[in-house]
Length: 145
Image (cartoon, rainbow, N blue to C red; front, side):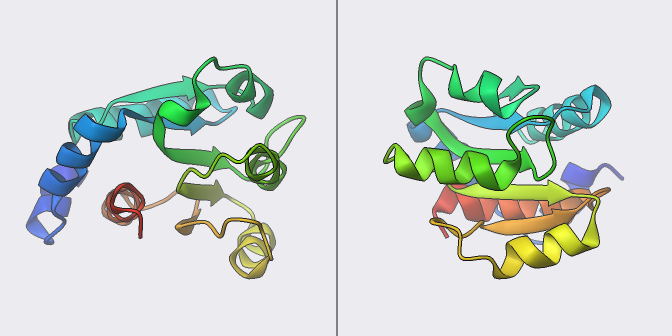
């Protein structure tokens, strides 16, 4: 069973996400590992959620339309500017995007879950993450939870 089918079977309301996406555009994925980046995009695509991928936080910040993203999925440990620094930079620019942070490092995840970031992440997920848990977090971010 695909992660999307399992997510639907477990009660995730992807219709809400799709409706929200129509109104709020797409999801930004900032991940330096190309395999993880493409896997995330494939999972989002299978749920009919549009996304745009960036290799670094700096690439994302150079995007012409930061405000068009309904959700940001960011690796906590990127080369150069990390995920929490990216969140702080967005906040300093007055840009509030519901964010999901992913990390393979348990200590980093613990710190981010309790950190006093300007905008608390919707979710902090372990890599590798469960597809259903990921889609639940995306749905929550798209609902503005």
